[in-house]
Image (tube, rainbow, N blue to C red; front, top):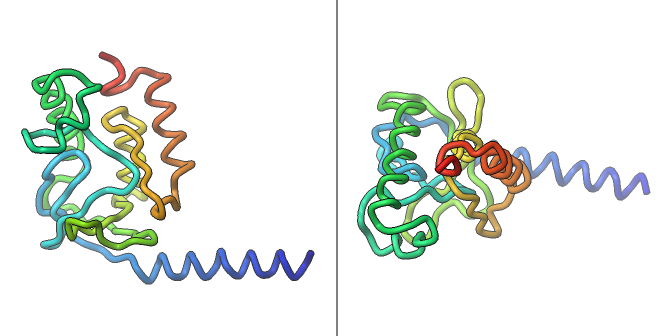
Length: 162
């Protein structure tokens, strides 16, 4: 039993070390939409969340459960404005990667840490501006994000108050 416990602790330590090694600071240049930023020249997609689209594109059809296109765009722009307030241009944030560092579009996949230590992905969910969007193998903070999402829905915050 002690050997198993030591092995598990060693794995947790190694995973934490690897996560730290694959994280870096960057400067936010602009917010594309509620779940995508340009940071130090890189397009960054926030892991674990999906915000409504803020412009018409092929992905908008996947969000029709939120309403018609105008409603989706309205919610998407609310989410975008919320994120722009949290990370205006010039904000220094820390990117933390999970198992996959890039998606099929070449965007960095990251948990974004704000200067005050909060996780941007979690804050967006907690305030109700995103849906939970978990894509394995990037599930490091899945439980934490799921809790934030449930809290927003239960408290009818952000998108869930309409």
